[in-house]
Image: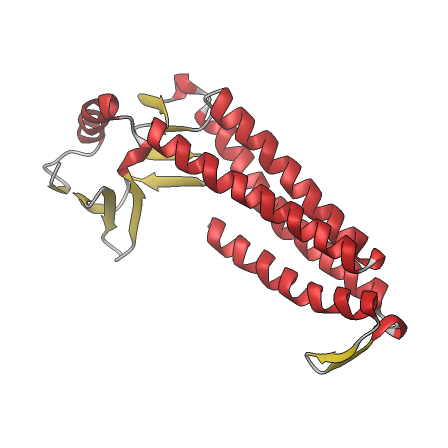
Length: 222
């Protein structure tokens, strides 16, 4: 799900930058059939307001899913199995989040540099960066990035939140460091096995088989 929101945020950013450059540098060009007449572009404030609104919308939806995931997985008593994500996974999440924060701040700085009229989308990027930073600190320092299992599902939350429900499963397999969950309707879900610390792996598999009987679902390489 993260990829979908990131793609939309990137599309909006790519669309916003040319207008910011044109308005700030007083250049004329066309965008999607709309003539941008540099500083004289009469819709510049409306354009940047819409851009900021869309960035805020996608950012809020993405962020709310992440925060909801943290709130769910930190309720350890609700889970039969619960553990913070592995050290290896933490390192990867930390790297990706730092890169994401850096890009947000670079986007913000670039927009302000090119045009003062782009202050609103730039401000949204700063807000997204701060939100990501706070989420990362709580997730890593407070060990709120976790994976847990109930009788009905596996729930994981770090950079994104994902739930794998047991209803309708026909096959569970482990292949090339990835867990695959295949359903009777053709749906296939997956997540990397490095979410789970190595010393917790046997406990995870045992709990999984207690909740999803091997007599009803086919297990491969587990």
